[in-house]
Image (spheres, rainbow, N blue to C red):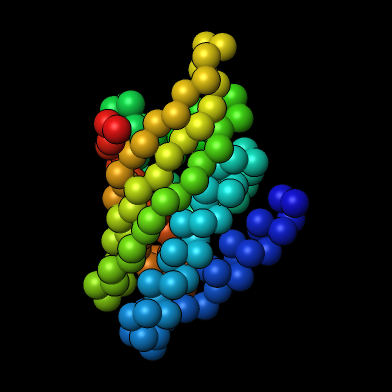
Length: 144
């Protein structure tokens, strides 16, 4: 399964030129990377996550923690299984930058108790060379 993610991620990261692609095509490719991110996080596929996060990513966790790439990867390995469901997402491209907004819910177990959390997220992707990398991610809780 991890090999599948590597193939899909590198297939999506391929040799794209933002200027040569239509906005819908670029946005669709970044949304595909977003879906791969969710699947890789659920499977704790650290290699796949490493390949889509910029080394200098700024990540604000749903609980408010400001995290580096290394901290996000360590946290992903350490947490109990989490079901990540993206309820909606929209991408907006601006040249070599794509901003994705959406709503998700997380279901898991923490300290022996089940939880269900809802959040609104904002991810920023930048074309670096020929690869789209996430440089910033922030999720804020939604109370229901």
